[in-house]
Amino acid sequence: MTTTTTDDGAIRTGSEQWPDARQDARLDWFRDARFGMFIHWGLYALPAGEWQGQAIPGIGEWIMLRARIPVAEYERLAERFNPVKFDAEAWASLAAQAGAKYLVITAKHHDGFCMYGTRAGDYNIVDRTPFGRDPMHELAAACQRHGVRLCFYYSQTQDWHHPDGDGNDWDYDESKKDFDGYVENYVKPQVRELLTNYGPIGLIWFDTPKRMTPEQSRGLVDFVHAIQPDCLVNGRIGNGLGDYAETGDNRIPTTEVQADWETPATINDTWGFKRLDNNWKSPADLVHKLVDIASKGGNYLLNIGPTAEGVIPQPSVERMQAIGAWLKTNGEAVYGTRPGPLRTTRRGSTVFLHVFDWPADGIVRMPALPGALSSARLLANGTPLEVQRDSEGWQVRTGAAGAPDPLDTVLALELST
Ligand code: H79
Image (tube, rainbow, N blue to C red):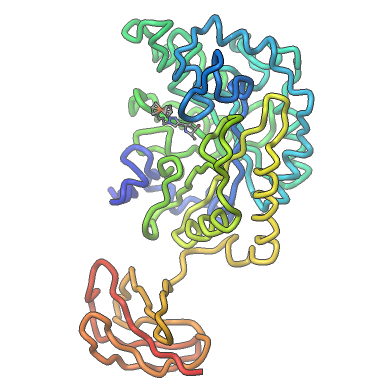
């Protein structure tokens, strides 16, 4: 069986792509999308990184665990959760403006609070908050209007509120949990709701598989596909059963990956809103990351964390718009592309061509260059190489059947203008 984990650790065992999915036409939209917008929104936006006057280190949506907040106390946040400024139209429109082709929003994060109207229990935004609406209905309609695919994040393993969910050892005894019962009688009914009540869903984004067995992962994948056959499942379903591979959070593989994959990433350092996190990445950094990922065959899923009022922080709005403006002009070089053959660096007039994937016939082909290719040599030993013009551009005929350097064979090129 082929594996799509990467040696650099970016895609780890368990989160890789199910091999058959590599050729599956259900993924065509995902392969072409290249850019998605992630939204982490939940009760944790209220404390926004601070608890009882203390700044809690780490990512904002983990505050319940980091501060070991008892369920009975954390639950009370719902009484104050009233996002009166929530505007589904504005969120979907920002995704479209940013050039994101899909939007993934937290239906339930590790804290267990459901941000949609579930009938499996009452720990949800409709039943427990003064807001009393299901924002996902409004978002589904707005995404449709803007041609953005709606997708749901759902924490299938960790649930710090449910007595049988994984992760909460301060209220519950981990050894007494009926995790399988939780998956069968709580997770599956909730996933069914997400796939039944909001129209077509692009993908379900599972996270931290941890104790999921191969049977449980397989059961959940099949369950999703039985309800919406075209709905994709990400690599964090666990046990190598994803429709596509997921890298670690904020991890970008160092080279092209022979799989369909995605990097989930933060725009500052947190996912859920944190008042004191103002470590915003620059628009240039974000565009470079998007292009770097696209050049390696992946998608960039870039996160925003709205406030408890329902407002997207202005620095995030500005960065999303900057990416969108760049994509409006240059999107042709991103959407629907596959990794290109050329990676170059330059010193003075010498251009170094880095050949990561050696051609079997030993002929390195290049499209038209800025100027004529006057000579080429193998950097490693100075061997002059035969250069030829062809209808597509240029050829360097190395005569080498295998890669001279399996790490990266560098050809030094002299261009004349
Ligand atoms: O949803 C986002 C994260 O909340 C979730 N994945 C992304 C998409 C995630 N789950 N687990 N992790 C990320 C990694 C957790 C790392 C931890 Fe920690 C290290 C948990 C405890 C120590 C960082 C520091 C988080 C809390 C403290």
